[in-house]
Amino acid sequence: MRVDPAAVTRANGLWDRLRATLDSEFGDASTVVLKDPRISRLVPLYREALQQAGYEVVSVLTLRNPLEVAQSIATRDRLSVERALETWLRYTLDAERATRGTVRALVAYEALLADWRGCTARMKAQLGGEWFAVTPEMASEIDAFLSPGLRHHTLDLPAAGFGRAAVAGRLYRDMVGRLSDHPSAVPGGLATGLAKACLALR
Image 1 (cartoon, helix red, strand yellow):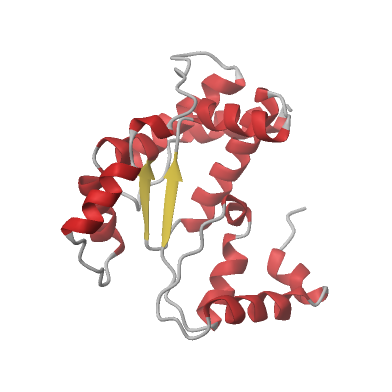
Image 2 (cartoon, helix red, strand yellow; image 1 turned 90 degrees about the vertical axis):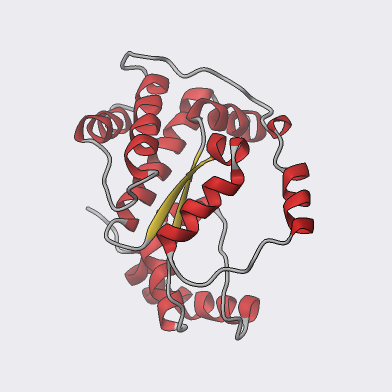
């Protein structure tokens, strides 16, 4: 049985706390950014809360090589890589499904490091709205910050197979290939089906 997060938060009195937290954090700011991977599983809840607060909500799906993410999570949280890959699959599937039919963009971490100007230009065009101009000084700081040295784990994804790493790699490549230029598209049925099966057979 699928649980409705909004219904649960209202029943437990957490809805008012969420709204109060958003108000205290952002006040009357015209534009806000929420960056937290855990929101991937609570997109409908946050979208409703933000819309009630008067915001127009758009989403940016940020993807990185799942093996690199899993290695980072495994090291930080003392988990197995297999368990960390399961987390990546669950969060990625939930975030993609919850943002379908909404204004969204997909940004691949590797593409951002390789060409942040082109990557952000495409993202801004897909999301619409007004964006501040990037000054030469800001661009220099971004160039210095976004370097390949940020990738503490550089790992190759399996090219084929049905192990968890291979399934995660298939979903990653499928989403980047389909959604980077066409964010309203959806991942292929094979990639999502294998990911769901992998989670079901944990």
